[in-house]
Length: 262
Image (cartoon, rainbow, N blue to C red; front, side, top):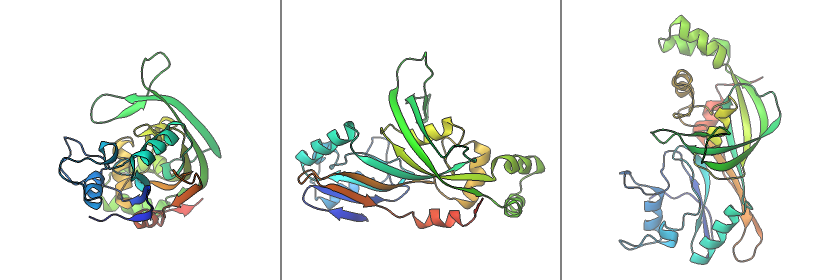
């Protein structure tokens, strides 16, 4: 067990989740999950699934996403936090590095998101399509970056890319934007789906980035560049506003070293 605890009191536990760790148990999941780690931490007996039947986990992050996550330690705190999320009083901020150069400094993306086909993919529904769940994501541009031409060509050649693939990368893998993202709702893959829908998929997104870009992304950024950097909410007892932050992980800091500000 390797819980990275940011904060803990009698009602809540705030963790810094690493990328690659699944949050909730599932019948199809064979590996250890955060829920398993919490069961051990709270010393739950076999068959006891804890608060909310999931060891107090109030919300979730995708497996590939890192950052702050809130756990309830009492049933009262669990219900309170669930309602805070439902009423959109919890403020969340993510860091995302995306492909392309954004023309606008900020924006709002609204859509209905639903599961699309197989393999856990989600997407935006069109106006006449029925179903899905309303979702909203705000974003702000932090900085624009470029992958230097000489480095792009060197890595492409070292990886055995032909001239056609190199031309594709020259058009699609040079410009990047670092965003602060503020999801107002919490749908599965919401940020990833929304950013792809405006033509700016997240770097190293194994589900939503074009395969030609993904292969190149993984040469210099080994994981999804999406990090839950902060969360703000009122304490279940005192109602005082609490703020928690998580630094950008080293693997993402190292990936940024490949880029230059443009």
